[in-house]
Every structure is written in C-alpha cells, then in structure tokens.
Image (tube, rainbow, N blue to C red):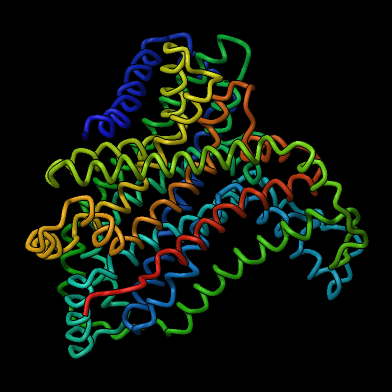
Length: 535
C-alpha cells in the first residue's frame, strides 16, 4: 500500500538527479551560462532576494509568534492566517503590484497632499535591486513560517512546557525578547529549519512572482533560466539546464555557509544564553501592529484586484475609477477553459492525494513516515525549476507531455507533499483508546473509520485537502512545461498577461486565481467543525 506514495516522490527526485547529472556533463551549456553577460548580476539578484525574504520572514514570524504566545493571544491568529496562506503567491503579487506601482494606490494617496498631477518618476515596481520582489516574498512567506510556528506552539505538550518555562523566565527577570530568543525559538528551531530552507529555495528560484515584481534587466537567475528553458534554440535549452543545476548548487552553497556560521558561532551563542537576564522587551502592540499590518496588506491587495478588474478608466491621481465595465469578465466567461482546467486539477489532486495519504497511514507503520517525510522535504527543498525540468524530461521519455495524465501528475506531487507534512502529525497522534473501545464493542474496521476516527480527524483532513487544492491550483513552472501549449491554467494565463498592458484582464485572472483557494479554505473551516466530541 505504501509503494505508490514512495514512488510518487522518489521517481521525480531520481529524475531530477539523473537529468542534473546529465546537465553537469554537458560542457557546452556550462560555457554558455558563464559567458552570458547577465549571469553574475542575475545570480546576485536571486541570492539577495531569497536571503532577504527568508531572513525577514523568519524574523517577523518569530517575533509575532513568540510575543503573542507569551501574552496568550496567539490562538486568534489561526483563522485569518489560514485565509492568507490560501492566497496564491501570484495573485498576491499582482495585487501588491497595483499597490506599489508609480501610478498605484500608495502614490494616489500621496498625490493630493504633495500636489502630484502625474505619477512620480521613481521605480517602485520591477526595480533593479529586486526590493519589491523581496518585500512581497517576505510578506507571503511570513504567513507560511507563522503557520509552522503556530502548529508547533499549539501542541498541548509543547504549549504546557513552554508556558511553564516562560513563567520561570519572567520570575528570573527576563523580558519577552530575552525569553523569545533564549527559551522559545531554540526549542522550535528543529521544527522550523526545513520550512525555512523551503522558503529560501522558493524565494531564490521563484519564476511567476519574479515575472510580475522582479527586475528585467537583468532578471533574476530563475527568470534567466526560465527564458532559456522555453527557448526554441537547443543551445539555449542546454544553458537553461546548466543554469537550473547551478541555481540548485548555489542555494545549497548558501545554506552550507549559513550552517558553518552557526557552528562557528556556537561559543558566542553559549555566552549569550548563559549571561545574566535581559529586561529588554517589545510591547505587545508592536507585534499586534505587525500582524494587523500584514493582514491589511493582503486585504488591500485583494480588494485592488476586484476594483481593477472592473476599472475601464482610472486616471492618475483619482482614488476611484472614473469608468466601470465588465469587459474583462466577459472575456473570461467566453473562454472559461483556463478556470475549469485549474479547478479540475486542484480538486483531483487534493482528492487523490487525500486517498493516497489515508491509505498510507492506515496500512503502513509509523516508522516508515520518516522516509516519506524526507522525500517530501527533499522534493520541496529543491528549486521548482530543477524539479519541473526533471519531471518534464521524464515525461518526454514516457510520452506524457501535453497530456492530461502528465499535467495531473505534476500537480498531484507537490500537493500531496504539503498534505503529508500537514496531516502526518494529527493522524499519527490519534488516540488508540478509541480503537480499543471499538474492538471491545466488536465494531468492524470500516465502521470504526467512518463513524469514529475520520469524524474526529475531520478538521486536519479537510484542512490538508484545502491546502493541497491551493498548492495544485497555483502551480506554474511544472504546469507550463507539461502543458506544452496544449492546456491553459489560470496561473499560465496570469503570468502571460503580466507582461502586457491589459490591467483589468490581468486583475480578473488574478482574482479568479485567489477566489477558489479562499473558498476551499472557508469550506474546510466550516466542514472541519466538530459536531460532537468525547465527554
């Protein structure tokens, strides 16, 4: 029973390794890559945006989680955080671009007091340093890391232990910043290290968000590689394959340097943890301000998508459109193929992934979860360009490119990986006393599952399904490669439109990219409520 799930991850990972080794032996691609005039700057941009986004997301999520945990106000974060997490990266990037562009909402709000009649001549979108991309990535990945920390701090054993230690630290004269850095975060570090790696790799190798917010001349290395991969020239394809491998190696190199720095700083860290108490504290309102500011950023970006999709005329510096229309939505209604394809792929991936995972947890001993978890983390920890190319070349060998089967598989794999990471803990921690009671009452296995176990696990089951749907719904790199021009998804259409001038149509596609995952999250929240519980 466990073989399909193992093969689901081990085959793509092996394909990536095989094709990476093949690229490594192709000298022509490497020479062309190093001779590219934009290679050095593109590499520096990718590493800069990835590092800034990862560190900023870690600092912000750690500060919010630790401060709110010490004040007992962390539980109220869960519901809005889930909605923010469900919002696809690309949809947020488009809404964020409407906010910060020279003619965007921020500039319009500043125009009246400053007397601007035309948009300011400053580069706020696709700036040469990638700052807009880094800020958007940091905001989006803060939600992901905050979700990971929330899951860890919500576990009863961890929560009780840390609460007692926090009280001890307060009694010894430590402020909340000292308690956060000396007590809470060191104990949560093992649980956040892999998510932090995934965030760094994703931010360094992202393609769709970089197409909307990232610089163009030069682009990030991921953008440079992506243009080569999609080129009709074989020599450019070879250069793209070498670039994807180099990007993976560069990410590994940065993480190795970071690990070495942590090892070398062990003595300094020991002195810090063992020195006297520090009374330095951050006020609770600051953490709440950061959290509410993050939520406000997501809400404004989403509302801008709605308004822009209906705006037929919106001259600067007007705060509201002068003309509204439904032309963009009419085009989508006339050609709903991309929307239907994305919905079908999302629902199918989440449904099949859930069936596979439940079969795994019911049939396989818990000791084998480590193998599958390692495969999931390796797959998610590799750049999407590398995994996408590996899957694409494997599909070429199997004749699956431009087919529904191939397109479904590249959506199923990442969705199931995230679903496994989320579902493994709750499913394996199910109290076996329920099974003992059912056996004592001579209940059959299937009846126990359908009337007791799965209803009690309803919340994590539907939550993981909603996240799986959102992950599959927002895939871009593997979808574009596997579709081979035969299929369209909302993500493919939105990235294509981002390079054009039809803002209402782009906003409409981005809003549609946002709406189904949010609806899936809302349905998961509603369906996950327990109708009954143990006395």
